[in-house]
Length: 149
Image (tube, rainbow, N blue to C red; front, side, top):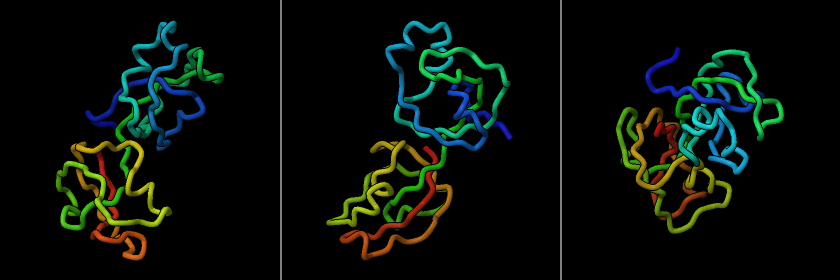
């Protein structure tokens, strides 16, 4: 189902599959000379998106994507992150902050500093996935959650 939180954009034909997640990296030098630039460059760089719907199978030429680009609807993608346990309540709105742990295991870096989220982002806690293993993070009480920015 497509809702009001979707954006129409163009992405590489190889990424244009419903449910596919990607991080929008922003504009390349080659994009400046493209007539479709405005449609492609309407997403926020550094954010994680999910393809909600492929709108058509018409392939448009692209200077970057050798397979061309397709028109799709995208939405912000849920991001798995670790937040303070007291803020981990499904449905709550939070201002995202990186955890302030004394130390942590390298294996959990991606969940403590997830791609697609910035300090201060307004997010909704979609789902609480459970507590973080105390052997991996010291000096803080964290829960693993799914967030939507």
